[in-house]
Length: 431
Ligand code: ACO
Image (cartoon, rainbow, N blue to C red; front, top):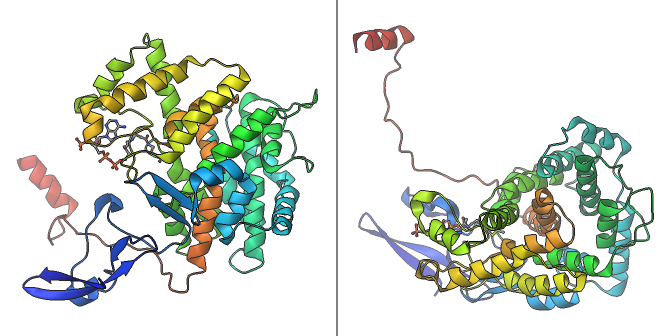
């Protein structure tokens, strides 16, 4: 199949068909308007491919997720987060020498400009860390202005990956009134972040291996997810040739919403509310089924996954292991499992193919690791960063890339005469 026929107003139009590596079919409508005067209309973009991409493959019907062809289960078991960053951004798993160089660069660029520390002072203690993170990432453009040309592009990619940890940890320290802990060059990417989060100058702190492993896993599972809301935002902003930092900052803002990355915070708040309400999870399943309640089961449902979310399955098993190793019995884990069991056997959820998504169990792990609820979406952003960067880089390097500019079907008022304010007043007086 290499073309599709569209019958419009009695005329046939041939449209090219594009087939992906995994036999995904796309009808290329890029010449549709020029040929027919018509556009496609697809609110929420559920049927719209915005690009060709070689980074991540998802088959939502079969619960498949692959980074550059590698199944997420294998990547999660064998790779470090730094390796995954390299794989997503540069297309191949690194050799030992390449990985060593990359890790070294990530280590060496972890400090933020001392002046940026003053920015933190300007935020109120109650500031949501996503507000701080997005503002600080956009501010990096003021310090590293050139980024579209090689080698500045690669250098700024490494700077961003490295500094975002420092910014996130400083935002947390600011929120609890503790002094900032500077990065240390003898620690790995993930250990360094945990050290900046949990160490205090008054005493030595050794990062527990279980925390380091859990963080690696969480970051890897969030690292990319093809053209989701925040990634599409990064591409949309980057398509105007806005710089890397501005594009990523926009992605962070898109991630913040409760229907996207903000769901991980909402899941824990929901589980806590259920516990405070006596643990009656069945009541909340009923509430989620009642459309008038305005309540949804947070961490349930996905635009793409209609069978299971492989990331949620890995995290569910990891939550059991990590909590057992840390000797933590979190009542919220039991509530989450019960909620999942009831929901998965309820026809409302079965018919709509609503399954736990990545956010359903991630919060339980973050909690066990001592990360406060308000930081959960920041943790998601740290994980998603290499994916955003890889997608931005792929777009910038595509010679055919154009500015993203959707069309619309106008449904407002037809042309009408301007009415002066005096005339409008007269009409009101007489009405
Ligand atoms: N609880 C109850 N009902 C739900 C839920 C839910 N969590 N999710 C979807 N539904 C219902 C909808 O009411 C709708 O029912 P209808 O067909 O009778 O009208 C049907 O399932 C389809 O839902 P849509 O909102 O049309 O699905 P969409 O693909 O647009 O939205 C989304 C996907 C945003 C993830 C949605 O399932 C949701 O709001 N989930 C809760 C928030 C959440 O967990 N977000 C994280 C997503 S994963 C991520 O971004 C990392």
